[in-house]
Image (cartoon, rainbow, N blue to C red; front, side, top):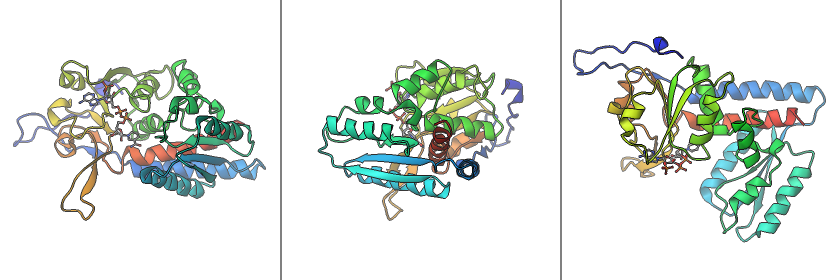
Length: 311
Ligand code: NAP
């Protein structure tokens, strides 16, 4: 996306600065499109006599939030024609026993993808468990081997949230090639692999990427440079309207619970971007909920189908 491709900001009589009402990047709709494509590929795969793709999720302990995520992943698998199972192990499992579970799944030809649900409770060395997953079955794309391949520009399975953000941009017509992209957040789960992915010399990449974080000096001056601004900070309103370049494309990865006394639950989900005011400056913006979240699950299915196809 060259700077010249950016939509013109409109000048409203009531506004001091150029402003616009952003187009909504509908992650739920794009995710449905991806899931439907995966279902078609899986149907062709099985019609060709290959074994049904199969995802095994290992759930350690009884964290209710993790159990909810795992159920949602299982339902999405079923819809795409992917079989799935959850191996629930107690919090007290030893590191050795959990490594043995992973080794058994690595060796099982029926299993196309392995996902060990994070966080792993109970004092287990999470990095050691993740590292033990066969990279060909690493559908989360977060093992050192998978991340190493990504850095080398030869990714096997790309981490789901970064891959989801990339697909949202491409399928909305915002190819990052040539664009100045700022990613706020440098976690190994989102910001860092996303920055690498969008900077690769490859289709869907070729962006000029800046990674910002808590030590970034004058964050607003950095984010205002962004033609594409992606925010994965984990803090509501990290990005306010004055920090956004008029006409920018804004992707909000953040998923935060904020107080909502008017709701029965007492809370609602909010992203990291001050959505209303930023919508008046940006050309396009992804909402929370209904943005990156559904894409993450869709890319998990895509990775599972891909893993099955390559084994
Ligand atoms: P994380 O591990 O806590 O990392 C947050 C990153 O943001 C860190 O690099 C931190 O900088 C940076 N940061 C925090 N506050 C900042 C600020 N005020 N200014 C600049 N940088 C700031 O979080 P994460 O796992 O990457 O997740 C980020 C958010 O995305 C969370 O809300 C999470 O729930 C959400 N998420 C959503 C999905 C999805 O599917 N929708 C998937 C994954 C994550 P330092 O490195 O300097 O500490």
